[in-house]
Length: 177
Image 1 (cartoon, rainbow, N blue to C red):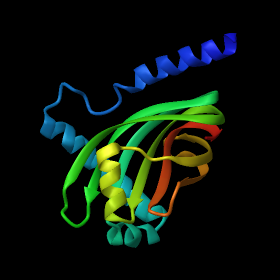
Image 2: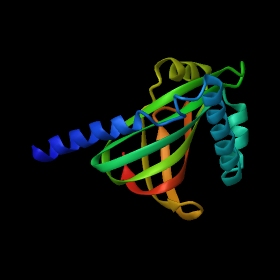
Image 3: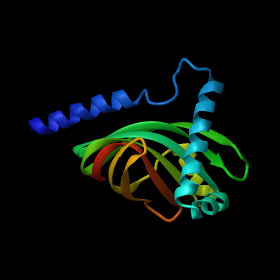
Image 4: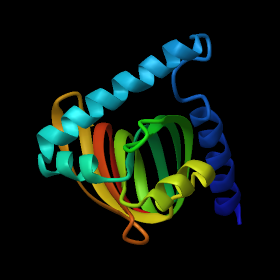
């Protein structure tokens, strides 16, 4: 019982800390959107460098989302948060979003990572924008600081309409959620 209470309190603290993740509220809306756009550009460039076939996947999709996230795993509980943008490839409309993450599974560690979600159908794209939910599974091992270290991960959404790519920026974690 004590362990459960401790895990619950740790999760509350972590979620509180991550709720502030993202561009500073002291910036104007245009400045915050520019921070997100810069992160999007850098993340997509990295993805295309590391996985060239992803460029065609993103281009031919209904839309895509690019998110900057931080995640903490404490034994059986995972929590995190971040920010990003979802782009409709047909209309070019950009929807800026905040993100909260929660999961259960075995893991330990902390990491900062970027995630690209590719929406294969207009329905799934619109559903994500309206409700923001993605339900999936993730497993990885990461040890990275700056350009040193590496990661191995597997990620997937439930269903065939979302493809996910994750790239660790920094951190040390091993998890399956």
